[in-house]
Amino acid sequence: MTIFAIGLAMMVVIAGGIIVVYQLAGKPSCTGQATLRVAATPEMVPALRLAGDSISGRGEAVNGACAVIEVSAADPADIAAVLAAKESATLTGVGLPAGNIAIPDVWVPDSSTWLARLAGVSPNLSFPEAPSLARSPVVVAMPEPVAAKVGWPTAKLTWQALLTKMTTDTTMKIGTVEPSRDAAGLAGLLALGAAMTASPDGQAAATGALRSLAAGRSTLRQDLLARFPRSADPAAVASGLSAAALTEQAVVAYNAAKPPIKLAALYLEPAPLAMDYPYAVMPGIDAGRAGIASRLLQAARTESFQRQLGADGMRGPDGRPAQGFALPASAPEPAVTPAPTATERAAAAAAVQKTLATWHAVTLPARMLAIIDVSGSMLERVPTAGNLTRGQVTAEAARRGLGLFDDSWAVGLWVFSTNMVGPVDHQELLPIQPLSVQRTQMLATLGAIQPKPKGDTGLYDTILAAYQAVQKDWDPGRVNSIVLMTDGDNDDDNGVSLTQLQDKLKTLADPKRPIQLIILGIGASVNAEPLTSITKITGGGVFVAKDPANIGEIFLKAISLRSGQAS
Image (cartoon, rainbow, N blue to C red; front, side, top):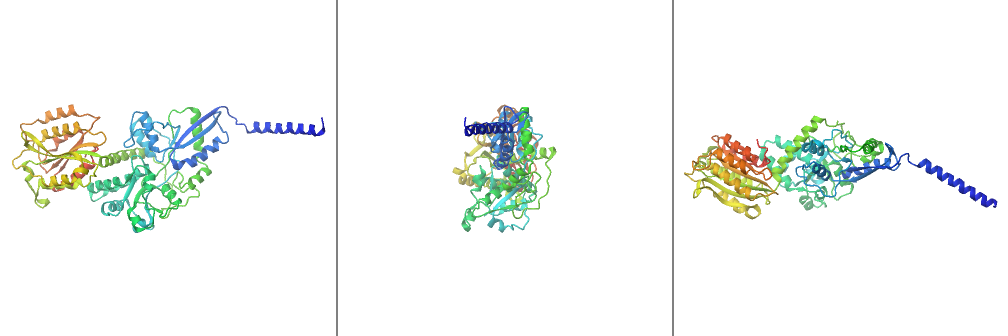
């Protein structure tokens, strides 16, 4: 063998030794593979993938297995729907899950309100330990020219002021992402709801504001963002979306794309619930994946993770800006905000449930039968209402209420007294049909209603007939309800008694096909006790306007509480 050949062979042996040494040195000290599947709200995916890759890429061993972390983007509403369906439960407004969505090992939604809502429908969906990974305040996003008109960036604005704008300024176009499926939209609705409670205009302003907000809602956040003006032309600004509750992160990301008109982030007071991005480990996962989940949480506390949050427009979990994140103009001085306590989370869950119930009662497509008392007592004058008759005041309240309903509502109209059509105590003036085809006729018919001078009050027969009529054509896609307005007690000796009515309604009532019965009493002489006993069977409530002049406000309150949470 030549010296060259010997040298070459030695080099091969040496090189082979180097390869072997390298492979041995770089080989992970683990056997097998354990995969952790993480589903996260889209804005959290880059930071979580960075943290996951720092573990998977090094072949890091966790409990002896090679850890592999897969992070995928998921709409929080979709994961919430899957989790609820697993427990044979549903979340209000979320709907059924898509067939191809699997339950992850770790879930990072944008808000703890998702966890609170799930815990509210099943004790098996409780996540007592779900630390926050990041924070993003909820702001009101406005095109900068619109924001400048309300004093941005120097003025301090409130939710009460926004509520006033919504109910008085016809040029303001307020939007939201459906609050049932979007945590930022829900946070904005909660803040607006608190302002409604304190509003001097009472329930009328609240219901009007909800209807206005519903008219501007979008199913997806991207659809909402596309409605902001795309041109500085005044006409485009005037026709585009004026304001919407979004996360600070969404505004930062929108402006980073350099749109023709940037969005201003308005930090309204009091501050709504911030997005807190909880880290929820699914109950019951095995020890191996639980160990990887714990290791990933540690990686989410590192400086590199915080830098990625800053790059993506988010704050750290304590509410302070992450490294590299510049606060938007007008942002208040950051303050460290502690994570909510268990008591605070429970209170928030109750507020969420009540707010969403009211939201859906007012905004869901509705099927309603309106019934007006035309007995002789409705001719009595109301001094506090310009000496109009009770009948005129009631019809006017119904006319105004009709203005709150959009064309998707299906509404019918009856009147009742005694012997209206032969021995029958009620008369159908208009069948239940969409207002898109009979709004004008409905308004004209309401204006022409005349009380029957010698008519008595066939109340119980009418309630029974109305319940049967609405139940016959019950619509699963709508809130089915009856709104009956009367100034007296039943005084029809030829009709069913209270006990007979109660027994018949108990037989008819079907929890799977609910019908809300709302009874509006007009005048101080109305006895609410028997009426309340009826609505306890059907669902709904009784509202009494002791001064008939206030029937309009009572009507609006009743409509807004068709969820059955009457008071």
